[in-house]
Length: 234
Image 1 (tube, rainbow, N blue to C red):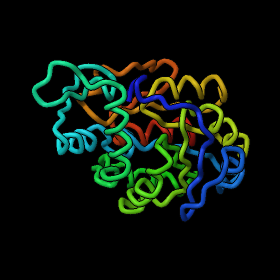
Image 2: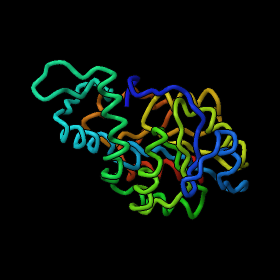
Image 3: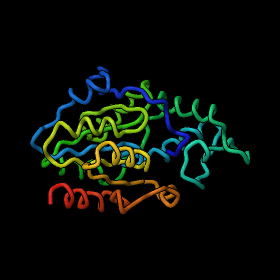
Image 4: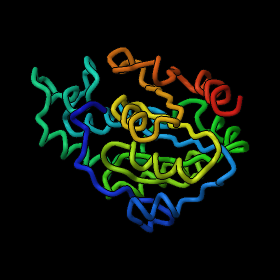
């Protein structure tokens, strides 16, 4: 979630029946209608309750989540310990989660229905940061929850891939993410893209870096859907 979740930059992967392509190939191969608006949507804390799911997963392994900052590993503690886990331990838990727990995430209320309505008027793509070995679970989760949209797996900042995708349509382009660095990356690489921020976890939300003057904020999909319609279809 926070800086401790940043991975080494790697090419993005588009997943279509688990076939992987390079970032450049993904940006060109994913279906984009050149005449329609394009909405690019993150998964964690936008479509899926990642923090709750990760909390449940680490709890099965003797750890607990104490959310008192906007971070991931720095909020994870060995049960009874006063010190949060170190980066190496956190990375092992994170990788194991995407092997054994990433399909056990609660969907964010209203997300699937809102995207279904919006997809009648714009192209919807999923752009998610996840380890390569988590792509099958992530795609399965999306399908289970009625989110049947093309998915690109990325690592690192999202500005470059959003820029390449935005170049493929003459319509307005929107991007939704929970992390301010990704929003700022898009602002730098694709400044014409309309940026939206949402963090579904109410415990994490007060600690999140935000800039609502630059990136439209909504607490939930009740607020997000009309914000998207106003700025992309209005």
